[in-house]
Length: 170
Image (cartoon, rainbow, N blue to C red):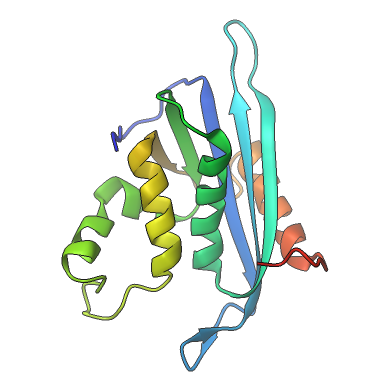
């Protein structure tokens, strides 16, 4: 995984967000109903960026953190194989800092224990995301909540996804 640490004008930009109502755990089990969303924008020379793909999903028995991770993973799955630099925008400092600072290297070296020697939560989701990120050229960029048009869009999409009553729950 090659990661750069600054915002650049890029052909491919991904915006992601996760949402979860009742964001809690009881006896170690997540109880929330969550949603995730992504937008993929591409910019052609001399044109504005346009949305070329988007996705949402819902899960029962989850947390906001897991939905943030899943939003990024689902977006990267939809990109497929590319060597192109991908700007990844998220308001989740947890996800962005993990990717930028490679927390996952320490987690893996410590047998998936965090700095407090507790098991890393959402390990399966992290393993899936790390596998995807390691195959792509991702530039993770943290943005504050509600600061851009596209961050507001994915926020709304993730919240809506968490409210949908669907038989396609994970």
